[in-house]
Image 1 (cartoon, helix red, strand yellow):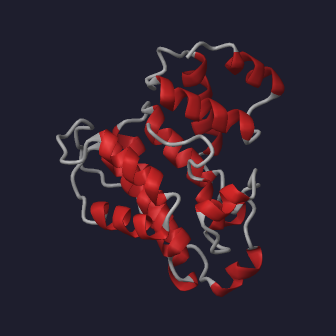
Image 2 (cartoon, rainbow, N blue to C red; image 1 turned 90 degrees about the vertical axis):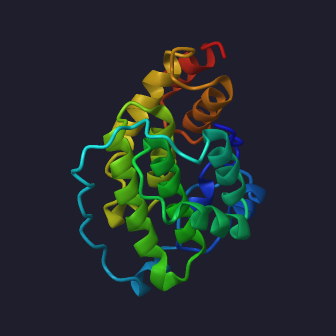
Length: 215
């Protein structure tokens, strides 16, 4: 997962305020807070539709290699034009590869960051539905869980779209502590570990344990 630890999905914190990922990076350590005064202009959240009940194999072949998706994600989190390109790349994806669906959900969330205030919530809800489908197809995939966790942990709680934070954090923590049997390559492991520790998602004791895990 070729995503800089300082970048990740912190751009999602600007979904409601319109801040870009690059702007947040310039600020040092973004808090993940949002401009709540903007939300009054958005309609109330819709009830999420259930993921498709049609069984689909999680390893369906795909024209989107993981390395390509990661590169697009890295660029999209930092740049609006790249975000639009990433969204268009995956907008029409209908097949059942779990990891591709995870990145499609991330692209939808990034689209929310850059969309008009009227459409922001719609894209966030689209992302939530797509994440649900992706995780349903491959529940133990730490890369998909990390994408969802990095989005949900930066959304306002009152939207009701951050209900998987605890379970995703637990899976990511256990995966990181079991590294190199984590299912993550070394770069992805560093990304996950840094995100968990630097954003205060783990206790001091857990952070110490993570610091002792060899890459």
